[in-house]
Image (cartoon, rainbow, N blue to C red; front, side, top):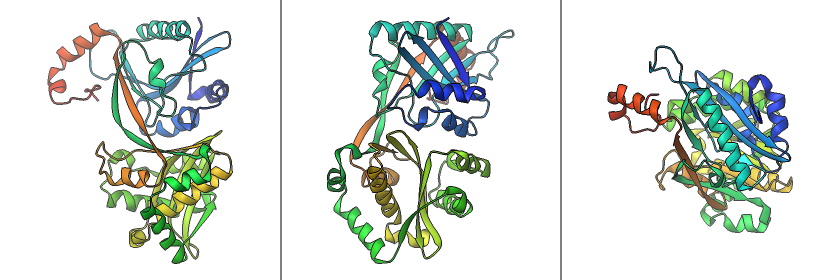
Amino acid sequence: MSYKIYNLKNKKEWDSILSKFDNLDFYYFSNYHDLYSLRYDGSVPCLWVYEKSEKTFVYPFNLTEILLKIDDHQKFFDISSTYGFVGPYSNSNDEYFINDAWNNFDEWCLKKNIILEFIRFNPLLNNEKISHKNTKIEFNRDICISDLSKGLQYFENKIPSKTKNMIRKAVKNNFLVKKKKFKDIKDEFIKIYNQTMIRNNANKFFIYDQKYFDKIDQISNKKFYGVFIKDELIAGGIFFLNQNNALYHLGASKKEYQQYGLSNLYMHEASIDMLEQGVKYINLGGGRSQDKSDGLFRFKKNNSTDLKKFNIGKRIINDEIYSILIHKFKNLKQNNDKFIFYR
């Protein structure tokens, strides 16, 4: 058997495999999947690995039991990418190796009674190019990237004048950005974050509990940039780093200071600081919806340099069982147009 499966009980081995790659961001690593395991009740984060000689194929996902009763004697499962930008990746473009990896993966899926997969691809890796031949790839939305590899001048030239004016306004009013240890401001940030989510009528998926923030506190490769007036935290953002890549995870600001553009201020200062540290890309993500006028998308677009296309993938692995599932629970299917309609 050429493939191996790792879960969160094998975090050291999981991360050791990924350390062979020099361009994977934090979405792929065990700590990120551990963090989001809190958001996917009943799912098991896994890393599927196929290796041959010096060639390696990796695929992180959540394995989830389908709770609907399909068969009296068997359990069935689906696999889906955790929230973020992940999907399969390989250090080889050898077509024969990639096909061999997928053939082994399909064999494993059939043994495990996995009927379908849903993939969130990584726009920086363009990894939809190595997806399974039967995967249906769909464009979902644009996401925002800051390409710091082209230097400070490129970054500054890409930031709109309106954003720069907001930054100057914040500086003129004596707001100051400081890098802080997250544990020192965690409780303050949680309050601001919860207030921000309520204010924005956020999806309950993004209302995080204390345990979630405690897990963030335990992650070593993170940075927190906060905006302060005197010693009071009034805005800030959390970033995760891995090698030369960074991702913007969470941000929040107090309502009474919104007119000063403090999120623009910490985003700008964080970007400059990371550029000076050798970070090449910051993935800011996308908006709350696919709408180009989405407020969160516009904020990220105005604080980044480029747009990348975020694609998703859908594949039915076991057509026979999927057909039974649709027929047996057709009422659920009729009322839900999602690929994983039963959850």
